[in-house]
Image 1 (cartoon, one colour):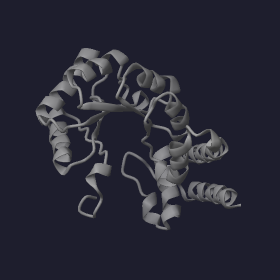
Image 2: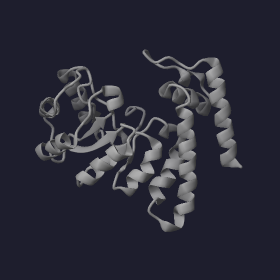
Image 3: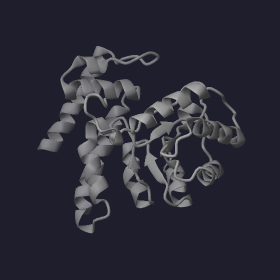
Length: 240
């Protein structure tokens, strides 16, 4: 992407691997490329890990990279990783590595979890992993969202992000939020990532977008037709 002209300061690559040395290598590569920050999962390949173990994991990654310009966004996604990042752990990491641990992506699906990070720590960016939560999270001091469906509804998210705090824009923000929720509901009609890819295939007018890598499985033709028909309905409503 950088070779194609994308500014590395616009990139937040996920750099988690299934062991510490490979994670260190990929994080260092990203930092050397000049990215804004890297997004690092906890060691999802082990379950039942203590906060002490998680602290040692992130410490070893950070110290292994050994760069003062390293910025890490933690990735809290317990439904998938089966490992959560507790408030005490995040606080300890912030104290040990100020200026390096800069934020967290919360894909727990629980607004109260996102809000707890936002209210507990200053100068710490909290991102929602689901589009509909961005608005209430911004109101609680959050920073925004990092989501797959933002590839489809970025314009609506932009309206909310830019104008959520303006009293005169309340109706405009509410309309954008309704659209965000409708598109998000559609992206969850089937398994989410294959559904988003199918939606991108229609939006980009290229069937290749519907392909996914194992272990994910692409939608069936009937499922794609259903999703595309609903997309047409949503687009008609927006353009009407």
